[in-house]
Length: 244
Ligand SMILES: [Zn+2]
Image 1: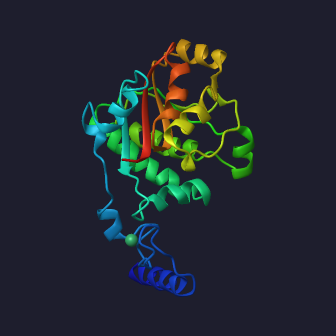
Image 2 (image 1 turned 180 degrees about the horizontal axis):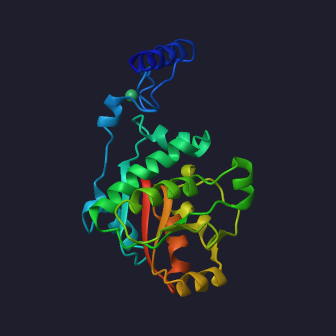
């Protein structure tokens, strides 16, 4: 067998020679056995550990707006370090498999904490139909699929991802360049709930829902998503990035 292992190594080394792969975070070349993120950057991810405690900054931010159950973000999102590239790769460069892998690791943190083990369904924050059509996918849905796999390791629930419970009814501007107040106005009433789907989920015993987005900034988008769900479900939120 050892010659196969050796051959595999040399083929990969050859591949890297002609098509060098770079670390998403630090842009240095990856070694043969590294994928997407180099070991050093992987060890230094600025994790928030919010999933471990009640009253964490993500929950505090949301509680000022809307009565969610729990909330957590995976890592601090800062424009000054390379970890924000993780979100960019998933959002703008179509790195779906990578997005799912990151989501799965986050899901394992959430599930392993015990605080999110009773989630029944995951709702990705929807894109407007036109934006999703332009992009070809919804990044929040990809992250949700990963989180579902990760939490499932720790949960006895048959977790499902439900992309059609919420709908984005207005084509809003991208949030990133707007001020706090403008952000609130931009997404006001931008989402509607499909009451038939909600009733069906209720009938199936779905009780606790996790709403997933890529980054938590002011919380205005998540607030607009959570509000129409509250008459039906207990709602928690999770995002990959957390802007301080
Ligand atoms: Zn790196």
